[in-house]
Image (cartoon, rainbow, N blue to C red; front, side, top):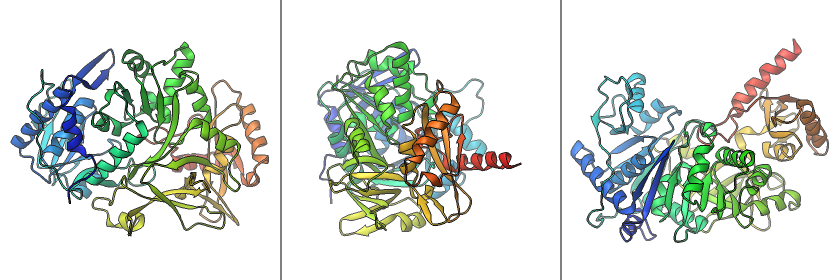
Length: 532
């Protein structure tokens, strides 16, 4: 069965209709590179030919590790065009284990990535074709692989011609970050990519002349396919929160960005810089937060830099199902102030068209695990039947993916998020969800954010609330405000201790999800010191 929705190749072919329009603007500190749609397509053809010459064949799995947006996009599109399978892995993930699971044929990346491959043994016994992109690093003498030159052509070429795959063919493997457990390779079939592109098109609603700031890595690949001029800022994808804010603000202003899409950590940098320097972002008509729930305080800070009619939304999803739902900041505030009876936590909004969330194993209050079916859902993990058995359920409507998130559905069909199932705090006769406690504590004066962790074995855990205060707030004042707020919560008396933390450890991909196992270990050590 062939793909019926507008798929990767149909969208690529559309780029040729306006070859002089800008496809990508790749930004680096102090400079930028503009690539037209015609140049992008021609670059893909040249790269595809080079890959074939080097020995890449249909069905080959190819790990791609490069920080250059143009190289990443061109190589990925070229691999699709020859029927190979690009594989994306977080450099900080358990790369060796990931490569053993997928057994890649090709390893395409910058010299530094190949150095890691050689020194740490990534893909040993599987990688038959190492291909090196990007400039050599200073003093490099070690031969790391065959050179794959990825050029930016001066002009476009002949029309794009490609035999389309079927919707069940494997298109890509995208590894989870490992922030919520061992990294797993989510399989995207061509139907999955078509579903994701359709959902993102609905979400972003591109208009002629729109310019996207892609601070969220998947949109670097999807932006051009959606017909958007895609600006890729010099985000440090290994540590997004350490990105120099000027490297985000300058491209937004210079290229008149209309759509900003990034993680809360990156959006925090943008809002903070604008506040400190009294900067406004007049061209932005929408901003979207990916990777973690958007907190009202960050939404308020962004609002001060954006035009009053800018649409600001929080998007919910995961590597295995992106996107699922979205909610505006106005609706988010309303839901927080006036939640439906029996609902706490964070409202995730209504599902996007075609997405069908369910609540599994719900208790008497409707709280259970969020599971999702729909066109954006990855049908399987690559080489992980154990993970499939845990997270994938085959139904008459397709694969139902268990997200590992706790939540509820209200009477209006909106999703509510209560935290990760793995992060439930269970004591003697009670269970606490992280989002229920934290959405209250996070709104208290002087507090940047809080994190609930449980110490001890499940069923007899001691709940501890870690508090990260704002730099300008006295720490004692922040703690007093949290204590006062907890007294108003029916389960607030369960919290055994409040601990100030200088800065929570977070996930490597978004720098937004709190690394709770590390935080719990820190809290346990801190409390042991208190009792000595």
